[in-house]
Length: 130
Image (cartoon, rainbow, N blue to C red; front, side):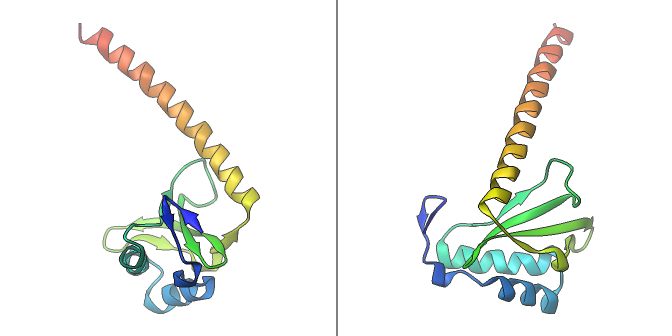
């Protein structure tokens, strides 16, 4: 499969169950999850995981991670000082094309609104600093 400009051998990707099991054994937190990201970066030469923080979902954010079966949503519900994001393994789910499309559209709308607001901020800041 082609992903992020790379040719990915799907057999080198983890399975959903392996990701969930790893997190349950090593901790449902960013520290344990970063180990999985490191494994992917070593295998593929690039971090293949994305952090999605927007749009008022039930969780403040989630990671998008490729696995053999497709793409996982790995949600987290809080950020702690020592362990950073606290992952909610019970809510890890494999996303359909429709799920991904929905998230893309929400993210695009958010990004457009934010850029518009920032353009307004720049214009205001320029006027105030004359």
